[in-house]
Image (cartoon, rainbow, N blue to C red; front, side, top):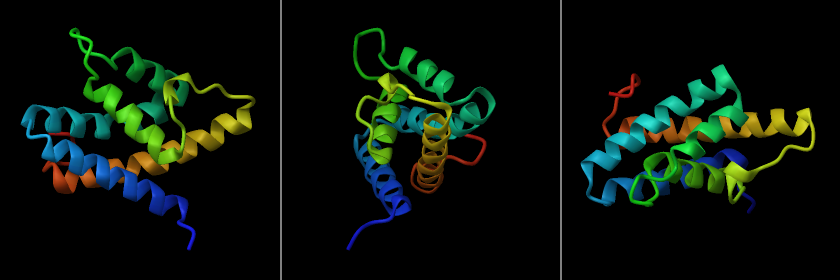
Length: 125
């Protein structure tokens, strides 16, 4: 049985949120949940290219570790089936629009699960 794209997004988002929750760091869970909430609105305001570039710029902490922005990009890329999402190039505007729609649909699942499992409300607090 083939999974729908929505099922794929939900499954990856759930696994990602569980991984963050079980990491034991409340700070990481809060940061990840906050990132889950800001990504969709940033895409709607700035477009996916600029939002991905911003998240990529925040992708590593000062000590070189993957930050929650970077982890989110990695997880979101996995959900939409693109490894290295920050390096994605767009052949034309149609491909860009289609990817933006897929990103927003997947991001919605991350946001839903972060609200329910990481105990962060819709304002990101």
